[in-house]
Image 1 (cartoon, helix red, strand yellow):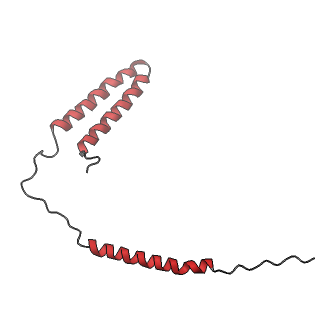
Image 2: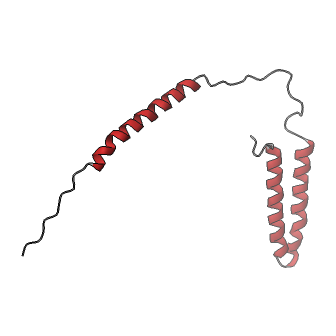
Image 3: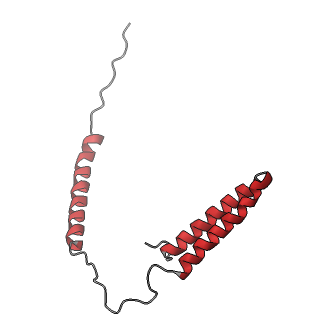
Length: 113
């Protein structure tokens, strides 16, 4: 899984630090000794970050063998079917269009007194 061309670990670390920042702001706005709750939140975020950095889930080197590449064999057939369905839709639309414009409009009767 990757988003914005970064790995999952970078996204997890960013989410952890954003949550730590939000909790830190909430604790700092509190009154009394609750303000000191910022310190454990900061050290917890720091510890999780260091664990994720120093103990990665996978190795940094690529495997020596080439991975199997998945190829879409129905690519051409799928686009031929899409083109056929599009042509049928357009033909049906333009065949029904005259019936819409040529529908008779009957005159309303005048009121006779």
